[in-house]
Length: 230
Image (tube, rainbow, N blue to C red; front, side, top):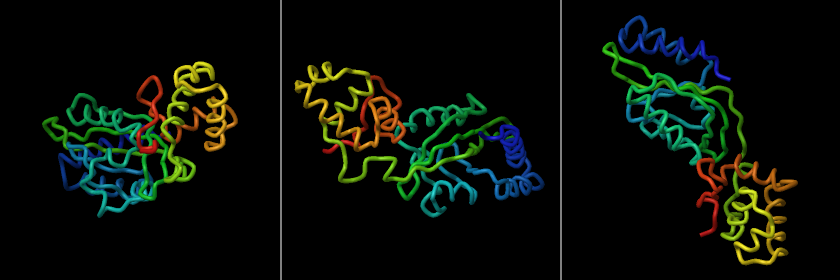
């Protein structure tokens, strides 16, 4: 969990630094660099303006290829839309704070799971100057565990079966909908269980969601096109 008291303090100092660059600017710079929090600032167009060493290390990035890029570019496709909406509300001055869970994609392809708080930094006249993003405790899942590797993408039929399993469809229902035999459906489900190292359909669904293979923003469940053979 992110310490909300520390987050609020940093946000207040950041706003003060925006209004009074001298004294508060130096305090904010020290907090930004040495707080132990993963911190970054976004401009009003939600592009990365600056990030501290802790943030860059967690995301496996460097300033040269990160500054000026949309923050959404570092997020997993399943969370880009929801987090993007929240950040847009901050940028427009309609909210002063948002937070929640996120999934990021490191430069090495690993997935990063964690929580973030984003707060608006305002000028003296109340206009939003920037967005301060603070990232809490994270956990990393390697590329081989977190996604279907290249060369192991799902066949279109397997993707449809995974979607059906995630929606709670029975073998008989899947067979009827996909015009397959019950044995054919069971064979493919068994292969999916092995591939995802799952012991049953419930765990298969859970792992597919946690790996980002199934999108979290639609119902019925949908396998993202990036994980399906062309």
